[in-house]
Amino acid sequence: MTPLYKDAAKGPFYHIAIIALLGVGISAIPLDKLFGLFISDEKTALCLAQTVIRYIISAAAIITAVKYGFNKEFSFRKGVKGYIIVLPALLVAINNFPFVALFTGGLTPTYEDNYLILYIFYCLSIGLYEELVFRGLIFPLCLSVTENKKHGVFWAVALNAAIFGGIHIINLFGGASIPATVLQVGYSFLIGAMCAISFSVTGNVFIAVILHAVYDIGGLAMSELGIFNGFQWDTLTVVLTAVLGVAVTVYMTVITFKLNAVQVKIKILGEKFVTAEKAEIESAKESERNDSRSETAESDENRNDR
Image (cartoon, rainbow, N blue to C red):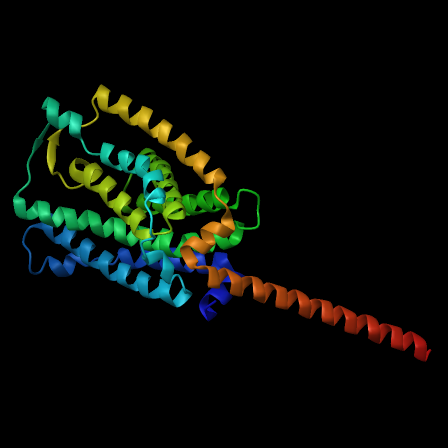
């Protein structure tokens, strides 16, 4: 275990709060004002500014993960079983694309090719930043909180998703309405849970990054950046989304209950990491037992002296 993780094990919620607040706070730096000095188009300046700051945070998150000792989460495991298990999550992400509305003429493209490239990098930056921070850093800390509980992985996923969803409440300060914010908190919780489960199954945080980025590329095309004009949520899209969402939620929940917290920890942190942690715990227990024996012996000696 690294010194930083040892400290986190003593007070994981403190580390979780610091990481979450720093990640969100830095992402809110208004770089668009700076980019606006050189780029006349306001939408492009804002998109580019947010993309740059997220990639900077992502790089910092990777460095921090290494400091914690979370190196293994960046490696792709041999075998395809884990990746096949999480394929339904990819279907959810792909379903966020407005395919039905495009085919039926409900949406019409309005983008320029150059802006489309920037938009893709913009969405990738969201997936990279949010997953490296909330799954790559915060999820292992959540797991350290719940690993000794029954269904420890389930509770770690729930805690992690609640933190991820709850952090979106700050959108109220950006002028978002209460209903819109509540809706975003809700679906952010679900997406966060889906990504956390996928991370737990595969042991690779970049799988969560890919899922999140694909989901955003389809979902933000119209609502945030105006890639399309028209109406996306026709009846067929709503029905397909609801059916797929319920089915995958049930499927992923069942998977989560089958996961073992120690095995997941080994998968994303490494066996040596867990072995060292157990050895340290046993050492602490042995030290307590020795202290107890010393106190007992001292007490017996005092009684004999009397």
